[in-house]
Length: 230
Image (cartoon, rainbow, N blue to C red; front, top):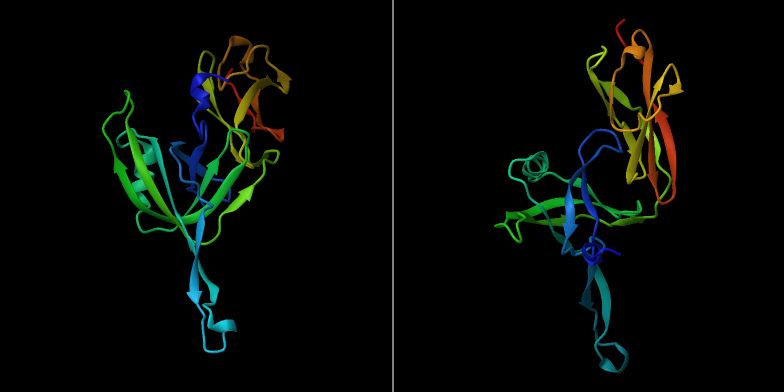
């Protein structure tokens, strides 16, 4: 294990549900110094009465109180994640802490504190506190499934650079791989997120197959075809 991977919580991502679909989560940042979201405390209520055995104190369990989740994330002023956090004030949100193998803990709650700090070891960080509302659920890694197909963007002409959008996936894929195709046939060496159109593609249909993978398995989804100008 590399030295940097020895840090507790290494690679754990904090995500927030940001779309109307069930799988549209946006990464707010990599977590560090985390108080996990599944903690709780139980109020103990005095139930002693005159008929208590030996007139000794009796207690019963009361309300289960959720804990606040506190963590540090990498901070970049006014980036998309910070804008999402700012927009979530007083709004109940769904959050996930996602481990590198695809396991995750999910909960709902309210952001109760967001504080940025001066650079530490050449990195800016922000401290985030979220008050959980209701139970947290722990989910084992499951093989990814695709819910919104990949798509291709870019100018459809020779020498243009096309870019693959991976689509929307359930079950937290931790990596994506790409295979560009011409008329359904793999294009040799075209396995990155972008593809530069060559003269031989003119007039042909181009697609991209995206494979999402985590520790439990993988699945592949293919985009709709785009046709390169002749």
